Structures are given as structure tokens and as C-alpha cells.
Length: 351
Image 1 (cartoon, rainbow, N blue to C red):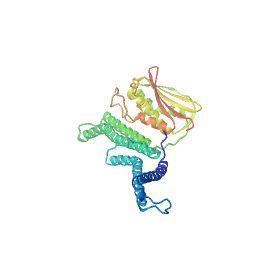
Image 2 (cartoon, one colour):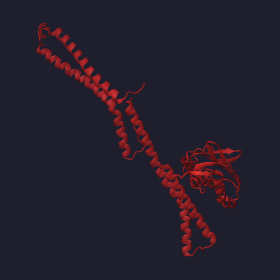
Image 3 (tube, one colour):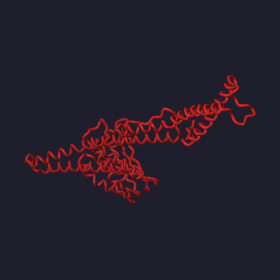
Image 4 (cartoon, helix red, strand yellow):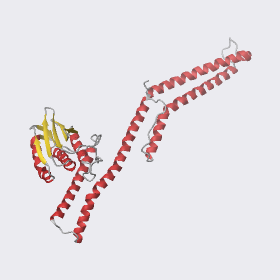
């Protein structure tokens, strides 16, 4: 049954109470006259009398009072049912204000449409608030965990250099540079994810040649790939699209970095596809693939499979990729192709 609106219920309540008062008063008067005719007919006014007898006036007053009392009882019940959703909402709001973010407004009886919608909106808001607070707590813990390792290493090495325990050899300086670089990338990933979550990531889209952009990016990663024992194969389709080249490069580099962390040394393939509607960039490796059921959650911040080395990465790279793709109006997907792992960024061609 469709719920009535609050205004409809108020109108019906006013009309119903008025009619109930009138009907009940008439019933009481009829009963009163019946009792008078039965037990004291002489007290009733004569048929030709203009005004009722005093006892009749008293009976009218009593009957009207009784009818009003009965109607008031009905009105109280109706008002109670109409106010109950607001009381439930107020109680839930007080509990949330006191720190119990799990509190929700629960309806036990049917309520007007406006009240039901208000409670549904309140509960949805409470859900988002609880999730936001939980996310803040989780993020603070995870960020502290991710920062601890590189900061501890940097502090220890620098302290050792200051105290003369270590000599400023090229290998040590390179290690310090590596830790500083990892720290800088982590901070940048955190910044990008934060901007994406708040909807404040600024894109500077321009028309680019996709194949040329990927070729330029490949030159940046060839040395790192070679050092890690990876080869590189590019299967590029020429075509122009509208995108932010800096952010697009950042997303593809994150996919390459993901392959370096989790895939076995192999020939890494970067492929592009261009259609009239969209463009796609795929990074394909021969890694073990994601654990079953994990691929849908892999693009959330700080998500890592249980089978992977927890020290391999921060768990932010794929979240950055998803966010950048989404900011362009596109998406990122994962699939297994003939025993190989393929991550594909798909973007609308015209932005």
C-alpha cells in the first residue's frame, strides 16, 4: 500500500476528529434522551417548548464533553503515530552525537511518506558518516605503517653516516636515494588518492598522439625493466585522443611498477587500441595473477592480496590508476589472457 503524505494524514486527522466529536456527541445525546424517557420523562421539556429543559442542557454539556474526551483519545493516538518517526530520528541523532555512529532510526509502524524518506536519508547519511570515520582511522593507521619503513631506514642510515659507522660509499648513497624516492612516490600517491576522493584532482586535458606518448614513456622505464630482468614489447596503434598526458603517464607507470613488483621477469607488453569511441592502454605481464575473488577489490586503496609480499608495495598504485581513469571518464579492468595478467585503461577518445 502506498504511504500517505504528512499533509494528507494531517487533513484526514482533522476531519476525522471533527466528525468523531460530532458523531460521538450525537450518540451520547441519543443515549441520554433514551435514559430520560425511560426513567424520568417528566424532566424532558414539553413538545411545544422553545428551549430545552435545564436537565437537557446539562445532558448536552455532559455528552459534548464525553464526545470530546473520546475524540481526544483518538487524536492522541493519531498524533502519537505521526510523531513517533520524529522521536525515533531524534533518539538516533542523540546517540550519534554522543559517539555511537552505529545508531540508526528504525520505524516500527508505517509512517507518512515524508517521514519515511527523511529517516531513509538520515540512515544513509549516518552510513556515510560511519564509513568516513572508519576510513579515516584505517587510513591513519595504514599511512603510519607505510611511512614507518622508509623513514626508519633513512633515519638509521643517516645516523650511521653522522656517527661514522657507515662510509659515504656510492652503494649506500644509492640506497638512501632509493628510499627517498620510494617515500616521495608514496607521498605523491597519497596526495593523488586524497584529491580523487575529494573530487579535487585537476586535469589538464589536451589532444595527444597516444602511440607517441607511450613510446616516450617506454624510454623512461626501459632501464628499470632491464635492471629487473624484464624485456619490453610494444604493440601500438596510432591515434589521437584528449587526455591529461601527465596523469595518463602516471597511471601507466603505476601499472608498469605493479608488474615489476609482482610479476616474474618476462617480456612486458604495452599495447594500445584505438576505436572511434575510445582508446585503451594495456600492460600485460606473466605474473601469477590476482587471487580468486580479489580483482574487484584490488583497485581500492591499501588493498593487497594475501599471497603477495606485504613489503612489495603500498597498495596505492592500482587505486591511483582507477582514480585517474575515472577522472577522465574511463575505467580500468583486469583479466587473465592465456596465462598472462592484463591491466587495461579505457578512456573516451574525446574526453
